[in-house]
Amino acid sequence: MASKTAAAIAVIVLVILGGFAYLAFFAGKGHEQAGGAGGSSGVTIRAATLQGGISTLDIIEAKNLLNGTNYTLSVLRLQKTPDIIAALANNETDLAVIPAEMAGKLIMEGGDIKIVAVEMLQNQAVLVRGDSNITSPEMLEGRLVGAVVASGTYKIFKAYMKAVYNITVVEGEEPQEGVITVVNIPPGNILDALQQGQVDAVVIWEPFVSKGLTRGLKVLVSYQDLWAKANMSGDPVMLVWVARTDFIDKHPDALKAFLKAHDEAVDIWVNDKDTTKQILQQLYKLTDEEFNTLYQRTTPLLVKGPLTQDQVKSIREVWWLAWQGGYLTGNPDSIPDTVFYHG
Image 1 (cartoon, rainbow, N blue to C red):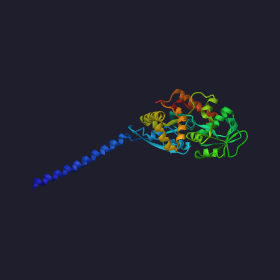
Image 2: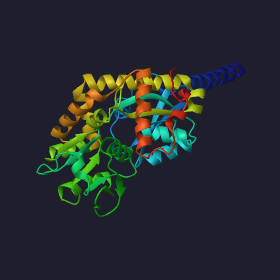
Image 3: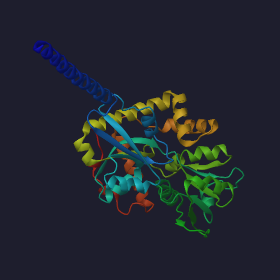
Image 4: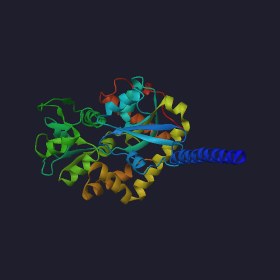
């Protein structure tokens, strides 16, 4: 009887131990699967972008291009570029895609960031109605122009008008003689304001440029043309990727993984139009015509690879232009080359 009892106890013990082993095995498998999907380092890369502003971050997120790395991605979409700058300052994001001139302003105001890559060349344009008799930017003098005043697109427009045409841009609600008067309009309303005759022209970026073109609006002048008219050298950089310096110092491999994903996203954008269409149409509610216009306009403007010296010179040209236009309050030559990340 005693031997039977001992045997029964032994069986129970084996069953319990086997249960623990079973649970431990599958708990371990679950952890392994989670790690295999990305993020086994425990580091989440936080990246900020403008709500309604296209970038390769759209593809990085949708295609989960950090999958298979040690890192996960968290995307922060904000309403205004100043909100992105605040997120960087408050350690709410590690990386952000912002206009080059705003990166310069942030650095000059003490922001501890580095420029780690170029995202895209200038895709902005000045639009007028299809039946407009305005044929040159000089004819905007004494007229009302719509813009998103908090945007880098407006700041560079102001700089271009001063540098190319020696025309001052002011903000107001009524047109004034001798200047271009800009009225602040949210991006979601800006095309309607032009079509309804509330303003004579608008200054805007993609995807709104392409949406406007499919509505019968026309480009008065592109920023690429204005860059050439201003006799600027190099390529007209619009958007750059910046990263907090403490993030770069603590997680250099995470930054490299993100930059690799950025290059992969450029390749997808350029070589896989159908995938790009699916992602951008869903995010920005684009019709087929709007997407095709956007794709044709933006694909040649994408930039991949590490920062080059030519790109650094071009970014400095953007800063000089922004200084001449009054956006940067000091000479950007004071910005050291150490703000440019070269791996």
